[in-house]
Image 1: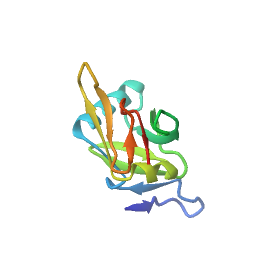
Image 2: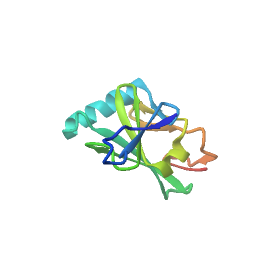
Image 3: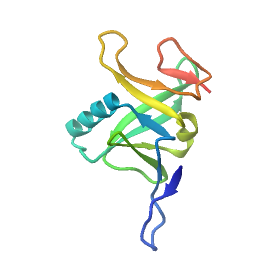
Image 4: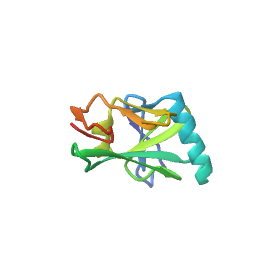
Length: 128
């Protein structure tokens, strides 16, 4: 579900608010992202998730930390963390879960994406 954020009548809404049907973080991923935001100096910031062309399967995930949502973003609060997705990427990550694995081999952030028709062996790219 996505709703417009209320703004003063003189301004148009700058971003929309979605729910965990857009994207969801596990508790482990949320804890890691929260620590990264604090370390970066954005304790009230957001994790931006985007899907861009590239990788060996055609599409890849891109993540960055930012101080606030941008115009037209979809903002989702999940596990105490604010996540933003641009409208185009939202269609690729809808229903996706982001996890974080602490392991020497194959650790890090992992996407569980029901929209991925196939993924590459490294898990960094996918096709839809």
